[in-house]
Amino acid sequence: MGQDEEVTRYRHLITDDNRKWWTLGAMCFALFMIMLDNTVVNVALPSIQRDLGASISGLEWTVNGYTLSFAVLLATGGRLGDIFGRRRIFLIGVIVFALSSATAGLAQSSTDLVISRVVQGVGAALMMPGTLSIITDAFPAHERGKAMGTWAGVSALALAVGPVLGGLLTEQVSWRAIFYLNIPVAAGAVAATIFAVRESRDTTVGREVDYLGVAALTAGLTALVLALVEGNAWGWTSPGIFALLAGSVLSLAAFVAIELRVRAPMVEFRFFADRNFVGAVVVALIITFAMMGVFFFLAIYLQNILSYTPLEAGVRFLPSTLMIVGVAPVSGRLADRFGPRWLIVAGLAILTLSLWSFTGIAVDSTYLDLLPGFMLLGIGIALTMSPMTSAAMNAVAVEKAGIASGVLSMFRMVGGSLGVAVTGAIFQASAGHDFETATPQSFVDGLSDAMMVSAALTLIGAVIAASAIRAKPKGVSAAEAEADVALAMSPDAADRAPAVSRP
Image (cartoon, rainbow, N blue to C red):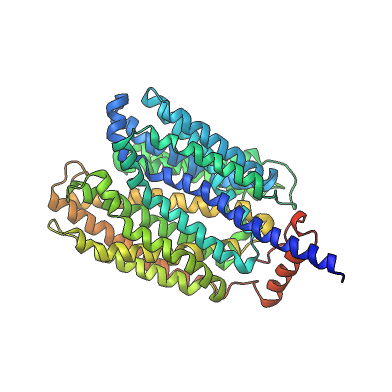
């Protein structure tokens, strides 16, 4: 081989290596924006109510409208990326998200704001699966844990920073600034994506969209998430909740029947024959159940019982955030080397300890009493999230990364809605009051019971992870790692789709 050929090969290798890190950066830009909008709005609700004269229902739907459309359309967004191109659908999602953020900031009524938030959720659902599937396409299997560690750290960081940033902008600028902030972030994500991300899609399917399956899945998930969101307000035994749950079961059953008969299904049920994939999505549901429940309750506790302002309460979550930022990338690298199983088990065990420590919260507890639990919370989340994500994405071929990412994200969002709904119901049953009317003692009694249930669930999750997820990542042998390197070193690597990852 001549010197010129060696130089050309080296340049392609460097270009491909740079491209994947720029790709990761672009996806993390977008991911931060998506996850931030899950929590950043909460602390601004009183200001929104004053400025727009919003009703309590309007305030609730400012939050719930985003959650509903986001959760319902995740699987569809993932599949559309597989069919029409992940880069294309991702960019469409970023643009929709940015435009709806601008209209949210300009809203003159609560109706305008709710509509903008629903459209934001649609944009997020088109973007979110793309962040994972594009990363999966850009990184070889033996490096995905490291990339997923960064991805998971950014995701959890945004959730934790949301209350701090929302409180700061609301107090110092305006509640409208929390939406305008998304516009420059979206512009950066678009520029980085156009520059670094190459197009990829599922080459094993045509460009047919299973419209009947989309309709059945959307109807079923809409009814389910709406029931979870409104269950505590309407009453779990009310006719409305019963009708929603029954409609969800019927629609999802119809979806399964449709998918088993169509040529290009929305969801490939053979994914669920893989132990790693099943274990990962169950863990995703459980950990998000616990995360959203504990963030929800502790934010209220810090403000209602310890009398912190929204900004001060948000700052108190920073120990968890710092643990996530420091530990998540390390856990991703360890998952690459040792496999995801025992990292997930350790993370869920630590998370169980954290939740158990919060069951001892009393009316006269201080922030220092809570600090060890906050730190354990961040470590547990960080040890679990990136190995869990790697386990799911390495369980499927690269061509199927879009729908696999959509299904994983859908389980996470449903888990979050379920966590707030179930822990809220347990709180109300224990306290005998809702959050506004509970006495300090009844509040901490209800919080203790809610945290106890979450701790029990994460312990069950650790057992499931130990039994279902393989100790070593399947399909990432030394030979395959060498094949990935050889592919990257080939002269046409930058123009060629990456090899299929073996499930």
